[in-house]
Image 1 (spheres, one colour):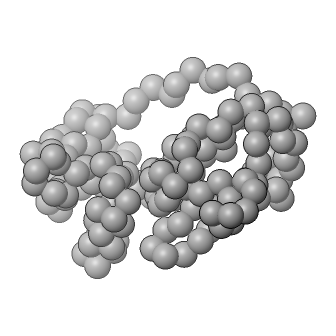
Image 2 (cartoon, one colour; image 1 turned 180 degrees about the horizontal axis):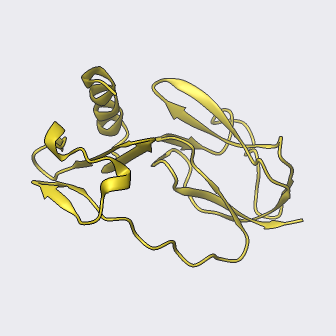
Length: 155
């Protein structure tokens, strides 16, 4: 990941009022956290630790790379999580009906919402079969990577 990519993430965080962003792939992990007054701070290169080598928190200013956390206890049902940061929309346009409501039966190909990221509308599919039991995000609100969007009961 180069500086241009990091700046793009920072701009997207500012635009969507996202306070934290974390990315982990292979032997690289970065976490950005917006401060109340100081904007976004990025850990210097010395603080970017391969994910496999992290054992204790490392911090500087408003940014921290946490130690691995225990997995949360599994909850009943399935969560459809956001695959990206952006703005969550329940319908294709303000005048249109929502893609899904509580009680809607979905399958793997059912579009459940749109997430706008960098002026691109990304259709999010359920990827599982089930019945929507909860909508976890309000329409037109920012979402973060991995944030639960919907909960469903599997069929």
